[in-house]
Image 1 (tube, rainbow, N blue to C red):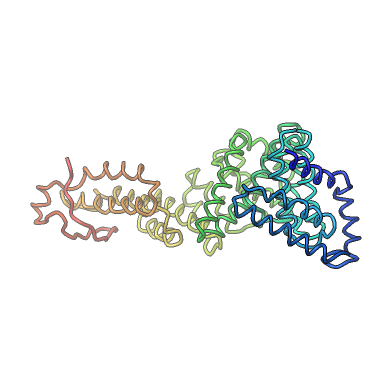
Image 2: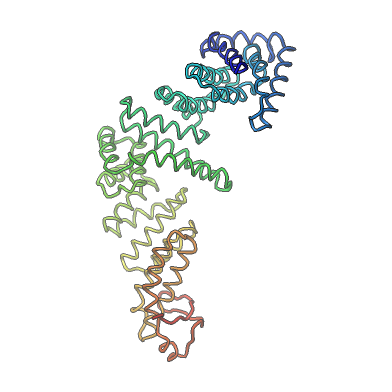
Length: 456
């Protein structure tokens, strides 16, 4: 208990000796007169060595042994007298102060530890820069230990994200969004801010998910970040909330291209395409900035309205789009449009083009399978040939399930529904075939499959 009081007294001195951000900046100017290790370089190097040695022992024990008590005095001396000596002073300092704060029972003293913790971050920025990164960590800890300071947390994390951009850390983004929600709940901002911040954060998260596709550990971490953000946004993500908000913004700035991209992207993402606002903004975006992505949006809207031939004209403009996801979806929607127009061979061509860009999209094989099943009777002239297309259809359904297991439930229903239309055992025997034989389905399908009998 006595050692903890001594440690608290040592750290409390930091709070009461003027080490606030402005004061720290003034002392930085003084420190710059000397070298890295300050005016007393020998004592500085000695204290760095001492505190680091005790700190390493503490760390190797899983932060459980009492060598932390021996580290604090030397660490504090370094912090005060040679702040440029090593960046470890601040990295280790966060761990030291957080540990001591966790041991403290008295709320007033614990609050002073929080002050010290914030000061460690501020001084690190003064002497080692990395402002965006450090502000992110500071804001996260401020959110944890100073819940009432949500506005300061919001401003700190907002600044961090502005500086870091796509390099912003996952926890920074999660707590920035939570602080944003706190701002709205306490009347410091309107709901529109939540949507804007969500849009910004989502872009950063998606960037990092794509960037780390080959690193399972990092990818898993970013997926967790995405899940946390999505969960927080869920209460504000309904079309009922989004549409009025965006309609107001659209009315105020109908020619703002970036706003139009944001509106169409969000309404598309949250499945609000049924609202007229989606069509209005998609059309306006195309008028102001004809591009593959705006043509894609307009084509999708026309497809939804049943204007198939017209939608195809816009989807064709997506050819060569650098965004592979948009490119593959455009081909898939072209396949759906041509299918609706009963031009099955062209529909299949575009479905396979979509699969060529995105091999994991099982929906394209469902489209092809459905067209095979739909063509069955027209592609034959007897009891056998009017049913063989169902073999090819089921083959495509199985392939859809292999490339995208999440489609299993949908696909299994189709397999059960169409397998009963396979030729009977008697029909297969009558045409001198047996189950397992290779068979080429004719007509426009022209694919090899295997002979199977209907299961009763």
